[in-house]
Image (cartoon, rainbow, N blue to C red; front, side, top):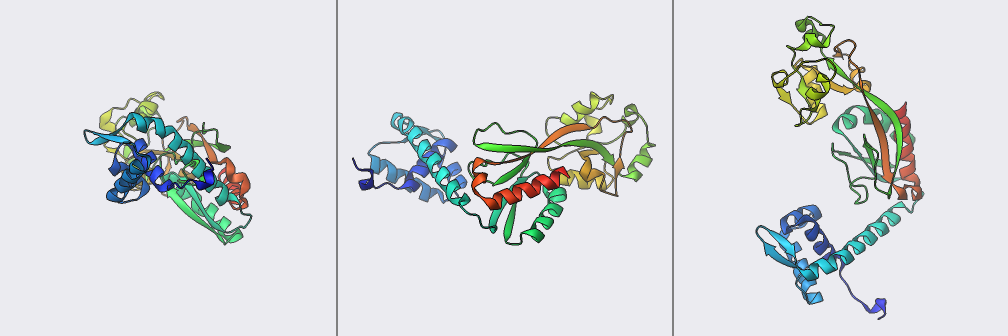
Length: 295
């Protein structure tokens, strides 16, 4: 059969693929930013076009039929091909203009990115930057962002990474708060202090207790997974928090807490899709970020 004579609607195949991956029409509709009835019609149209049932209802979700399982891998291959085509088309330009999406955590997006991007804009004013604020890993293969600032090295084979520095996380509090505590010089003197936890797994408490502290849940009256909000709580004198020392040391409203505390080292990686080599615009932004974070 001549492939040029075949007519096929990729939107329907994409609707099938995302519905299979998400497990329900409602979740797939949110992922594709479509109305659920529209998505449902696309799946039904593909079933009618192929002459097979792709899903059967199971409780509140959908379950693939045997035919659906058999065709899913073909749909995935089509999806990878479509993404590769999109990435190649996006990258085939040498013009230093257009949009670049950068994914970064809330703290880095708030405190470290702005001066870097200000210098970049002065040098290349036709490049527009979108900041994707997320403390989770953005999927660069799916174009959730073009470049990501991460604290872990990627393992995906289609991504490249450059380690720009080893950062140090330290404990901070306001001078007034430390004065109220009596400015203890040892970790044991902080048994009556309030700390701000940064996740639901009590990771900060466990970390500090390995360094001579003796803390329990009573020492953590606040928990916040947003570093920017946590930092504002520290600045308001609500307790002790931990943050990258490039941010903490630059803030005149706080100072380092706990003399002798061993800072926590963690890497900063810049990550991008391998197709960055085809786009001068992306390379310029990537290099500007590398220079800014490593300075």
